Image (cartoon, rainbow, N blue to C red; front, side, top):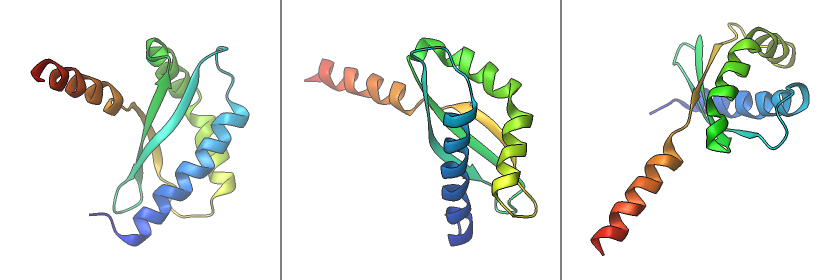
Length: 111
């Protein structure tokens, strides 16, 4: 279980980075991303960002765009947050919805 401090840092990073992405990042029309979960290590050096993408077919495009813009996003986040060390970011696609759909289909087949 994450400590209170790590939980607060996760929420702060999620809020600030969501704002930065929505304001600064240019995406294809009709593509939407949401930061669904933030997982920061106990030593606050690394943060994994889980991203939900709509439509799902654009997941690869979003991952490539985020990797390309990672340095700029990291810099803008550093300007907003005054913490040492600032965690290094990494992005992953959140597969929770896809897994939930699979479970729901299986349950429907059973009943």
